Image (cartoon, rainbow, N blue to C red; front, side):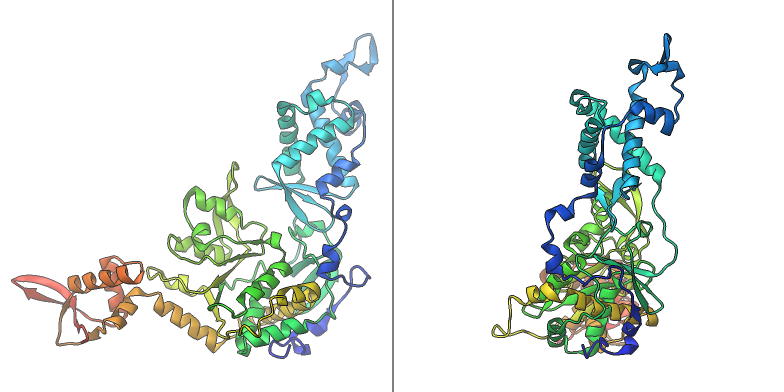
Length: 516
């Protein structure tokens, strides 16, 4: 890939070593066609491994609960089962379930009120309903309680609460080091100081995704390469895209940027969306609008909880109306923001999902700080693909055999942005950002539309200027600023305030005049 540093050794790819599996890498399609039996959920595996046990032995030998007060007076060697409270049996049941989980190398923990299970490759969230259902069936398999008891709502709820307690007691795995990890089907890729090594999966990494294809250090992507060169002929624009997609896998790199893929139709954005969605995994991508995830209150908290465990929030909804700027900046920066799953307690979310937006039009919102605008990278897609050149099968061609090669292209961008500590400078990207900032400013657009010019010898009242500006905003679809903020924007644009007497009263305004 000549315009992205994919082939050159200086991009860091020459340092890639290791193969965790020792087997031939599998493509996305080969893994996708894996039999259902090989895709059993960790909860199913756990349930299948449960066998009948003696809960009395569990209480005496594993939990070591003193059962002397429950022994029969005339036969001290035996325990009167009827006297032992259900609460102790529930403790024993959950203890047995966790013991089996450890034996078959499954992990269980609780984070922010959600239950996670590790299946040998990655941690996934298991719904409360699934857990409750399986706890009842596993209790029956243990052979102590009949379905008439184990399936009741009250008993199920008690099992669930004990399960949660034990999950919390297990603690959330913590890994050492700050290297970048990419979790794949055949192992975990560890990237540190330009070196890339494939190693075995590790539960302590607490990775909540696995990409559904193998890492292959030799893989290339000629079809994808040609596509990128076609839709982004500007070399530096494609470098920025490559770097941002690598940035997706980082959690500690504070670049604080969101990406906008900007342009009309038939320009390759939809193909890129399909490829990136499959490459990153549909389950690892959310698609919530900017206004939803950046709103205040319970609604915003619920939406933001949907960002947890995601790699990307990839959306075409970028209308900034209703966006809380502080929340947006915190999300992009990975700083704590409030979040809450439905029917759960609220918590502080440190967001790692990178923001990507597909946009035919850019948001028109002027009441924004410099900090809001500077967090956007805008890559313009300016090439229109003719109907004759369009290939509706192009995404599938890339997805079927080139995802490992596309990942290598992304890794090259990741290594470069890690080394430079910033994204590559691109004139096209910079110009698109400058235009975005200017066009989003309703006051600057108003000045240009009405040809308002500075004139030390003329006076335009703030009232007249603001009334005309309000009419302009109503007709153009801009959000109207308050009169005070309107005046501040005029001052920023270089207009000088002045006062003069009109009918014996002071009138505020600016040294300016309307053009002809």
